[in-house]
Image (tube, rainbow, N blue to C red):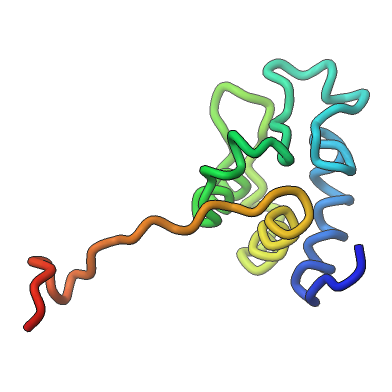
Length: 114
């Protein structure tokens, strides 16, 4: 894909080498191996799912895997930077991710303006 950032280009190479085996090169999960896995690999192009997935959650799933599925933990294989690259590639090419939820700051727990 043209116009990818350096991080997205690294993510593309990592995705194709590590993730496409189950999720397919196009992110749909519709490939030979994916048809044999139960549950089937996540369709990374599906708006109903990806539209609600913030980057931090996707990174966690890649790093730690998903219990009860065939999604393995990649944290022992990919560095944090590499997981970030894959996440950026997925968000750019397959479907935009949801914004990170707003977390309260600990410096002003009441939310009131000082």
